[in-house]
Length: 353
Image 1 (cartoon, rainbow, N blue to C red):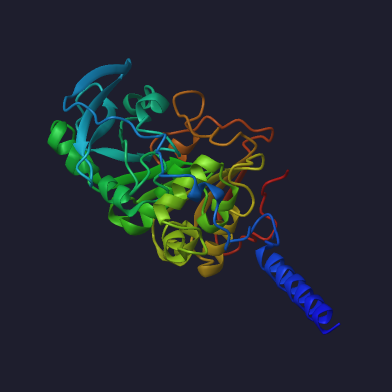
Image 2: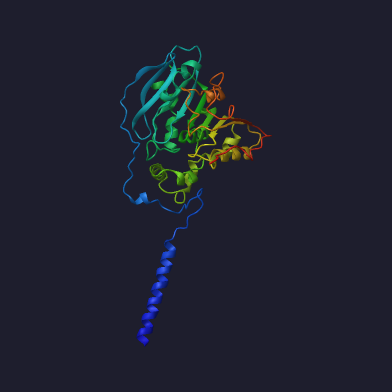
């Protein structure tokens, strides 16, 4: 009888221990906008990171072609922070200019490379400015740099790179624009904060601004790239995610004298309501008297960007063109909000699923 009692006691202890282990292993799902930040994605255990956006080094040569009747595009090279030879693309007016020209630094979207020659067409020659972009490279992921400090530092050398490879260009250092869409918009905001002397104007479109929240919404390949860039999840590497989030620098943006232009769409499922409207409110709250411009429409993610097609609206907003053809929107001109001390951003147009 005593032996039977001992067996029953041992079985009960085993059941209690098993129950405790099961409870410890359960992950309680959290709100969709703020996923379980302590979780480690399964792919971390799936082997070494393979960067699908990786490309071979570029040739050390410079080529020229007409991008339009008034615009030349030069494709050349630069040495990146890690010693790699990558592409530098610049488009500029075909004919010699009598004065120095504004420079537009363009930051590419996630998983991409320097494509400003494809998106600007004849605009540089038509309106008289230089546009330049580099392939860029993150610390671990090439095309998914997500605000990599190394990539931003390379972009800060663009004038230096241009003078080395295209010494005939005359650039007005007091008229520089940092511009980009999606991840490129995130980079443009961060670049403007860290290198204000090289970005008197910032244009950010459809940009993620809180990378801790964005991380959990990314497709697996991009989430893995961002995990590599920060060497962990937002829970494990909060400082890295904060450094790469424009929202972290709302106070700096609120206190700067830079021209700030923010575009987003109510139909954007990629960077929806917790992103750019949140940054706009944070900047306005930190300094209500700080003026900046908001444009809201209903384009698809990145649809308001390409000046080469029908939309030079943001070029006009940035002071690079006299007038702007409006981006696609079902509203006449979309919402155009010139923010000042009297503006109430409580009900600012946002994402409508």
